[in-house]
Image (cartoon, rainbow, N blue to C red; front, side):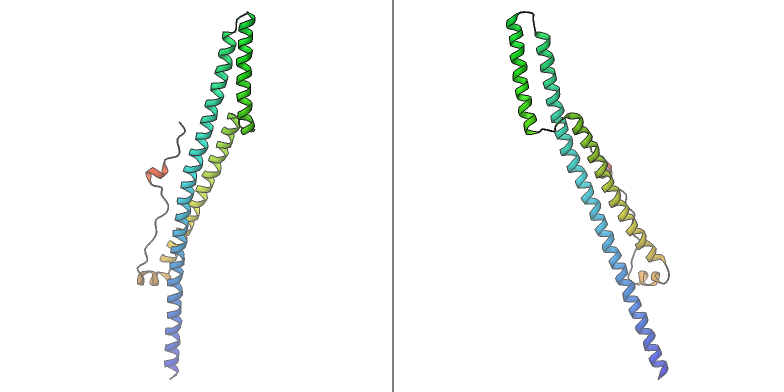
Length: 180
């Protein structure tokens, strides 16, 4: 009778251990999937933020360049006559008022500041992406270690758990945003 209770106790303990280990594998698999989703979010954020930011910087740089070219052209066309000087003055006044309207709408816009903000955004987005990749690879490492360590490997074999692959970006996802 004691052997029956002892045998039954061992079966219950082994059964509980088996279920607990199997559940741990499943939890780790969910963590891997969650981390992979985090990488997708980071890649999407990188694309969205950087392309929008670059478009803004390009537009403002074009505006600055156009304004500067107009000022230089007006200065070059100025003659010594009073009417030419008046025409130059009127042209510069018109450009100044246009510039003031833009600066009132966007008081802090300057191409160099936009470029610095773009650089900060690139750095932040890349750091976020790297963190997401590290989290994924960390979860994969824990999962893979659990599969190969005895006695967990017995449960892994029984439920046909296989090692997960570490993160390697697809060729299209490896491509960084290009600034044209």
